[in-house]
Image (cartoon, rainbow over all chains, first blue to last red):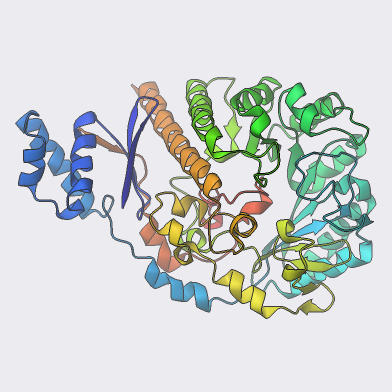
Length: 461
Length: 48
C-alpha cells in the first residue's frame, strides 16, 4: 500500500507498511502512480512503458530501475507483515504505565468547549485528597510489572487549585520510585491562572513536561476561555506562560490550544503563539457534537486543509531560522519513531493508561470520566471490570474496518477510542472528521521532513 | 538514485520482532488529550 501526493512543491510517496518516505521527480511520480493503478509491484515493465509512451525512453527505463530496486528492498509496495503480530498484542500482559490524575474537578475558568464541563465532569466539584493520590501511585507501581518509566499527568479541571496535593504526590512518588526501582515522569496541564514563582520553580524542578492551555489570538482565546464572570483570560496568562517557557529554555513544554468552527483560520493562532516567542506549540481541532455551535463541520474541511497547508509552508520557510518552531501535530520521527507494536496498539487507554477521579475511581481515560458504563474500579480495590480491559485491549488498527485502507493508520494507530465512542457508540469505529484532519496533518508533517532534508542538502553544497 | 530520494533508512517491518517493550511515552500524556498521535512519539530505545 502506498500513498502519493504533492505538497508545497514536493512529490511525496509514502510506503505505508515500511514507513519509507520517498521524494521523487515528476517521472518517478508518474511511474509509481501507474504501477499503483495497475498491479502494484507486479506491474509488467511493458505496461508501464505503454502507459507512459510519450516520455523519454532512457529516463523512463532508468526510473523503472530505481523503482524496482526499492521494491526489492521492501521500501515500496512492501507487503503487510503486521497481522501476524496481532497474536502478540492479544497475548501481552496488561500492565499500567500511565495515570491521568484528576487532581481537581473544579476550574477557575469556564471554557465553552470543555469536555469536563467546567471541570466537574458531569458530577460534583471535588478535590483529590493526598490519601487518594498516594493510593493511585501505589496502584500504578503495583500494576506496572517490569515497566520502569511511569507517567503521571496532573490534570483537572485545574490542578493548581489543589497544588499542595500535587506537591505532596511528587514527594511521595520520588520516595516510592527509589524503593521500587521505577522512574516517575510527571506532567502538569494548567490554564495558568494561578501560576506564580513558587509553582514555576516547582514545575521546573519536577515536571518532565508542562502543558499550558491557550488558544492563540486574544479575541479567539477570550471568546472560548473566559473566567466564570465572562472576562477573558488572555492578558492574565500570556506573560506567565512566556516567563515559564523561557525559564525552561523553551523546552519540555507545550502551549496547547483548541480551534473551533469560530476560528477556522487557526494558522493565524499558531503563528500568533510563535510571534509571542513560544517554540513548542500544539493547537488541536475541537471535538464536539454537531449541535454545538462551535463544532467543526464537514463543510469546514476545505478551509482547514488549506490552513494546515499554509501553516506547513510557512514553517518550511522558517527552517533553520530564528523564527522556527515546533508544531506538535506536524512532528514526525521517521528514523527513531515508535515500533510497529506501538503503532498497532494505539494510545493504551483502558489498559496501560487510566484516568483517576478525585475519589479514586478508575476510567479508561480522561474523556470517559463521569460515564458510569466505563467505571472500571477504584485505586483501592483495583480493577473490577475485566471485560472493559479486554475490550480496550482488543482495540487496534486491524480491529477497525475504516483504518485498514487508510495510509495514516500507523501514524495515529487507529485514533482516539473516546472520539469513536462519542460519535458512533463503540470504540472500534473512527471519528471521521478527525480522520480527515489527521491525514492532512500527516501529509504536512512528511512534507516538512522533505523540506528539512532539502535545506540540509543545500547547506552542504 | 537520480529520480528518487528516500528520507529514511529504518524500516518499520524490522521493528516487529524486537519492539513492544512499552517504555515509551503514552500518546495522551504529551499534548494530545483529544486526539491520538503516535507517529511523533520517540522510541525509548533509540533515545538511549
